[in-house]
Image 1: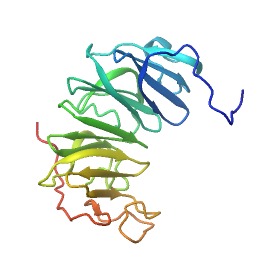
Image 2 (image 1 turned 120 degrees about the vertical axis):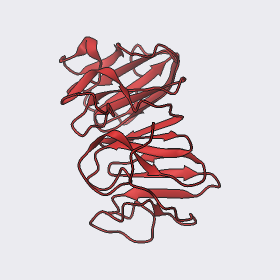
Image 3 (image 1 turned 90 degrees about the vertical axis):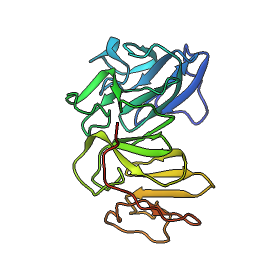
Length: 235
């Protein structure tokens, strides 16, 4: 089957509690304790047991997690996946060409089919998109990965494998979402702060630009401005 205009049930998958999809693959958390992925395996998305293997049209269990506790959510970028555990720990796998796995000083060249510890802190929410990943931690947002469009909330530069503090609002960041080259945070009170590429007006500032906007989060309609430091997240 090359395509379907109607929903098709995923084979041999039950008790899914969360799902995420990337470029040509999808993953599901099963019963809160495991992850199964299917589709393209070019970057090791299907896990270490399928490392180097072909794509799969059925779910394949991803093994090798460090944290053995409950998995609370899962998110995917273009070619990487991250699983957030109830403990707040985060593990990612797949493409690491832009340091989107967030391994800090640990060396992961190219890609990793085995989940690796990301971020190193305690996150309450995670979102991946494009070649970057962001987390909500201690009422703030930290991001890592590609930064050519200022999508980490800092001056456009080389990718970063360590978290960069994207938002320090003086108020509570409650959620973050990540697009291909931009990100937005929902903050307490219902305002929204966005930063990164604004080529199609995706920052909601009433205009668009072919070049990266000022690296501070752009204030969306109704939001209040916030100064954003260019600093690494403290331990």
